[in-house]
Amino acid sequence: MHRVFAYGTLLARSHQRRLFGRRIPWEPAALAGWKKVRCVGRYFGIIRQGGSRTEGGVLLLTRAELAVADRWERIPNLYRRRRVRVISAGRSCACWVYVPVRRPAGGPL
Image: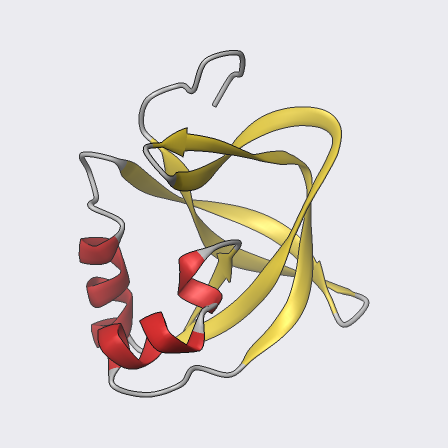
């Protein structure tokens, strides 16, 4: 299984059912040092920003579901996947997260 930190549409039950054919349970989590911003049309991304914190959730995806999520996030054109550490249930855990390929106005990636 693959842990993915999601902060937008991947947390929505309707998107989960459409993409994966099932609801994916998730645990609340936070990513320190990153800020959620609107960056790809109507979609959000995250940028590095000291002192910031992005709230979201950790999903457990199969390898096949991770490939579906990669296609949904349009890797490598719009987003890329990178490893981060998040805090979930009081513990630090390694997760994948999707970050924009292009730098949004006003922020570093």
